Amino acid sequence: MAIADDRQRVMPTAEDRSKGRRLDFDEAVLITNPSNPELQGEVDDKYQYSCENKDNKVHGWINLDSNSNESVGFWMITPSNEFRSGGPIKQGLTSHVGPTTLNILHTTHYSGKEVTMALKEGEPFKKVYGPVFAYLNSVSSGHDSQALWSDAVQQLSEEIKSWPYDFPNSEEFFPANKRGRVEGRLLVQDRHIQGGNFVYGDNAYVGLALPGDVGSWQRQSKGYQFWTEADKVGQFTIENILPGDYDLYAWVPGIFGDYKHNTTITITPGCVIQLGSLIYHPPRNGPTIWEIGIPDRSAAEFYVPDPYPNLINRLYIGKPAHKFRQYGLWQRYTELYPSQDLVYNVDVSNYSKDWFYAQIPRNIGNNTFSPTTWEIKFHLPFVIRGTYTLQLALASATRSNLVVRLNNPVARPPHFSTGLIGRDNSVARHGIHGLHRPYSIEVPSYLLVEGTNTIYLRQSKGLSPFLGVMYDYIRLERPET
Image (cartoon, rainbow, N blue to C red; front, side, top):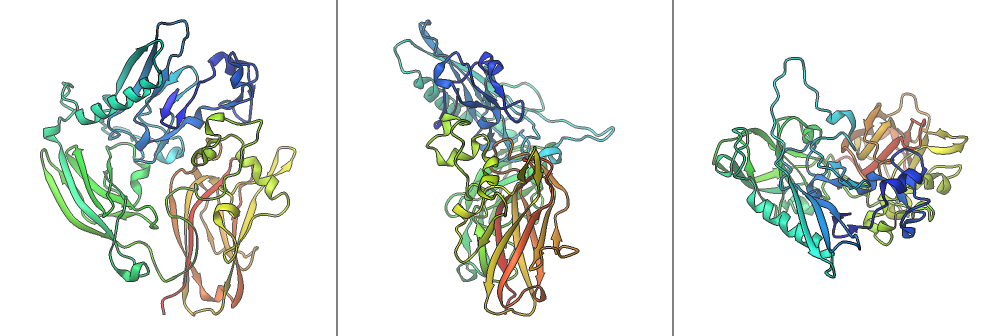
């Protein structure tokens, strides 16, 4: 099975799975008696092979049958993501044991019911999915079967060049000359970054989706979405856009928050719309006192523990960027913090080593789990009268309630609570993010003291090891002076 240049492996068979030992859920099986001895003791779980929409363009299988005169490749090629739900970083399944190959058009995986396509009684709905391309290739025996993957990647490039296809006869599928294009440049202006000068929207994700609130694109499923990645100076071009009304959305890796253009854009057949320079003013109420993480909609920069030697997928050994895909990592939290929860000191701690990738319940034995409270400790030499701001972004949430308190772990009521949020299930499904949830929390200065302060982050739900949140980024800002 091949999903990417660095995600290819010989797979177990369906029979190997049926003989294996079920782990914490049906999808995860420990291979105990495989037909291929090299797979003995590995974990197989289809969610370990999930992929973001922006990367889910070609995947499939190579037949390595030694009794055949040739090796055959079977590939699912998707030249456009315009019909998929949830935007460019929405995750979905690809290929897995069977052999099975999927083309996910719409899914609630890694997002939950918030991305469910719900239609009201009598509500009209029309959408074109595809076309997608099932591609077969082959090489004669004695040749490197890896050439089949390289050929499939090359074929993907040809299909992208041919998009939108000219052969569909449906009136609902628009050819290139009936679509539009949008061009522009995204700049960022934050008075506390580079003195308030404009900075480039370097590698920003810029897209058109149905009109909605800021960030609403990640929950959309009914309409089309058209995304691109800006260059190093923030310039972008979005091509092959279907006629209709759209809002323009964007976010910049390394910059907190979401951008939305203030005017709805109407695409007509053959149009070219030049937006010029767009200025994003990210959420900001004062200078940064400290920050934890990187605002990139992912928890990948935090501490991801090593997998258990008896619960590994060998594909990801030696690949740090994919370590989070290993099975059972959530169990490491209780080993690291058997009786007391994580405490992070902003002056000495390192988030890549000292901030666990997910705040999840502690296992207290007998299949019972307890909510956890993390602490952030920081020193203030003085307190400025006014309102501080805690900018906090979650990368994922699963049936969680994050409660925030300042300098009093039992304050009633708490200073902030998200309420019950999330059905992402990213911990169990080996994802490092789900839906992005940013919050700007006001902190009155009377809650703070000169000297040592503590922020208590309590995830109050503890019925399952998979409930919890992943953090994207946390920043404390002081009042302007």
